[in-house]
Length: 325
Image (cartoon, rainbow, N blue to C red; front, side):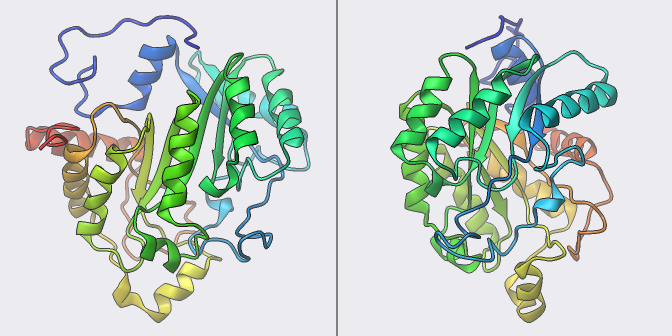
């Protein structure tokens, strides 16, 4: 459901019509929808099947929602009020015109009966300035009825489904108490894509026990899935998580790369990733008061992206260059 058409660069040397060396989300959104799309986060009071006993308790060992939930999110306020506060915050911060997506972000945002989901999503779509929804969830929270609801909604609004899978390796998923296996993730992604939904996923590089080869093996695995977008980032140790305890007990199972090492890995990963997959994120930031990662990089995400671009340029390569080899 494009908002309008956008110009492209016909002279781009890469498989996408802009001159960045990876298929970057800002250019993709402007090209596809004719505008900048800005997510406005919402905490709608959802829980998670890995917390409420549906499949486990305590949550994934790496999870602390305080690390990414904006200050304007408050589950005690209505969806509409959170969106209106979020739009005001975004407009004061960025001073750029944009269409907004209501971003159901905290915990698992399809983990509720379909009629409750219909009411919450409908409330968000009625707020002026909202062009659609971005819905973050887990693959084990997407049954047929919920996917049918999202397919119905995409006929009237933009619907972006973000399915967190975290790793393509079952041993890693078990180690962090994820509560599902990789086959579950594959099924959810394929079922969502079959309904014409815009499907993205999220993975973490550096889960305990993984090697650089394990990280790199996720490029062809993800490329084989019907994904539109990808968020990926380095592992961070956060205050209040079981992962911090795991690290204290078994530091030998963890590897936290220095920045240049991680950038070199990202170049290798992107080279093997399908070129049409849009990159929404490559790095993570956490509030300093929560971040206990032993190796930290003193740069913001925009600076890190510039360094990634420079690494790609130095190596004279780009996303997808080796994807078919």
